[in-house]
Length: 231
Image (cartoon, rainbow, N blue to C red; front, side, top):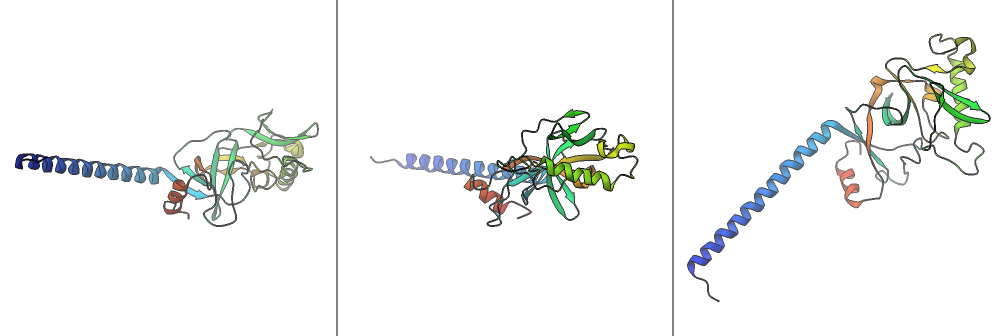
């Protein structure tokens, strides 16, 4: 089938229109992607997970640098009970779960042989704690209790810390304004408020909004590798 000169010109015109359309679409996608990346960078930061204190919720891996869970942290988000936050402690960032907020009282107690966290007089139900079958300290709470008792002993002269300063060993502690009380999900191995007491809210980096599991997605792994200021 032969085409006339007019047909060939129309085909060329259509081809140019299609090419222009594709170029515009690619350009807009690049613009939208750039805006998204800039906005994401402004609101979020990210970090690899080091240490075992938040297992099994968030996991670290020791075989090589990029085979770790990654958390994306909203630097502007508010947080409440049960949220996971990142706190700047000296020169490192630690990831913990929010247990108590300003105005709360909190204690780790032995209730009928069971070690529990008590906030404002109520025992917390914590289904996120790491359990170790066969361990004498099944959920790590006996260890946390011992550490917290030691913390109380070391701060027994802080009159404004305890609800009942005359019986500090059995007393809950106060979470003051500008503070947050946090614990790790892996109570067997966590450096948290059981030993440090409440942390300053000014040291909170932000709230963990996204958890990316190591090895779950090749695309995500690549993004984490190339787009991660902490890699």
